[in-house]
Image (cartoon, rainbow, N blue to C red; front, side):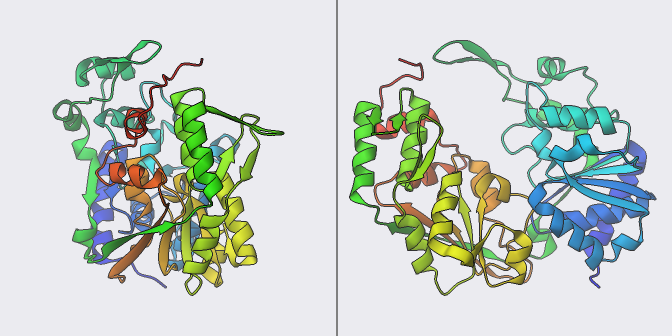
Length: 416
């Protein structure tokens, strides 16, 4: 049976004290430092007998394994683990709720639908929040994360009242309108409300000494792929016999160039196609000797990988952990809450525009015992991926304006 590390025992004792006083505690612990076990032990110290643990679907099996491995399953009468999207199915009553990757409730100015439902169902219960990145893009993201509890420390009825007091509200000029920008949350005004609810802990404090080595590999794509991208940038539309690739707005053009650079496309009809399998075949051959984790961006990229790998590839974490198969995960769903420690290397088929995705997903290999993490970015020669990489590694999203500048695009974001 696994045992908690000394720091997990200490942190859960501190968390229990905060939880008893405030009914909320936020474990802002970096990835791989053991947030899950710390949270469950906190729930036990609190005296909860019936617990609901909400997480992402792909992380459920990992949490259930922790329950057994640490012997936690014997400490509670009820301990349910489900994904956020299933909360409407909940019929049991609970003493306490644990919410994993809690920053997902940070949308603003409007609360997202899942967070709203969560507040309706569990707002009155003691709550433990988990996230390695509580406010990855803006301090404004903290309001709704606490607003889902009836014990929120913010004395504001809604986000707009909060923003009036705690945000530098700006006008943002879009192609079609002027909208309010609430992203400039003022730390000195926001943090005093919530600082006593947080327990922070870093990999360095936990004793991690691993380094991340990033490698960029360039893959030759078929000549037709380069021709399609060039033609689309020039003409904004490509009409085939049965399908049409349309890029009549800057957003569409950015998306199509991104798709085509890695060999897939979503047609105007909504149908998809692998137009160039070069990258999938390249990854299969280059990493043939290794059990790897692969991150992809667009769903059709998974089709390309499955065609290249056959039955040597899985999308199921449990199967990955117990067989010699490699695993493919979409970046957004796989960047949080799971461990790919069984992978010898982490390979990116494509790259997301988001800096958050970059930093969160590349940490999936990290463990305390692992001293080196090898990450490989497979970029098409002359494709858009390397331009995106240069932005996100500097903690900046690859925005539409950056895309226009990189490609000399004059098209507006309005439909013709």
